[in-house]
Length: 200
Image (tube, rainbow, N blue to C red):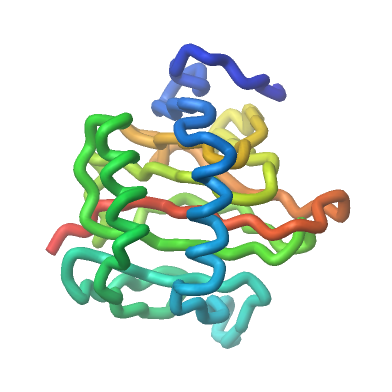
């Protein structure tokens, strides 16, 4: 089921979780300023993963920032958090005000074109506080984002716009998978900020 943007935030999932899409939360002009700053001033590195014992380096780049130098392990690789930049703190403050949630870390993803995506997965690592959820802020190219229920296989998708915010909370990570499907239609880059809470 494809979902279209609705100005009124509401739960997009029919059961077993909460996904709130707030739509655009900052203007196109401000979102573009932040996008250019993060594109050039974040310490981007190619993401790494260990899959079936094989070490893989992705074209997609990532960066990990937090209140403290937390270690965060996923897909068999561990990252140590960098201290916040001023711009990241500003975006964190905006996100926290809108969602009513406090976060202590942010994993950033940089997709150069639509050819780069993310396979089905859940963000259910033990280091994450499942009660606070994950807030996803999109800057750059608008991309489709999809959910699939782990048991029923029900499928839901929506378009995440430039400057838009989405919050996944409750039992979402336990019950649903999510992905960013690749597409040859998108030629522009996208930066995705996923604000999280690490249990120290």
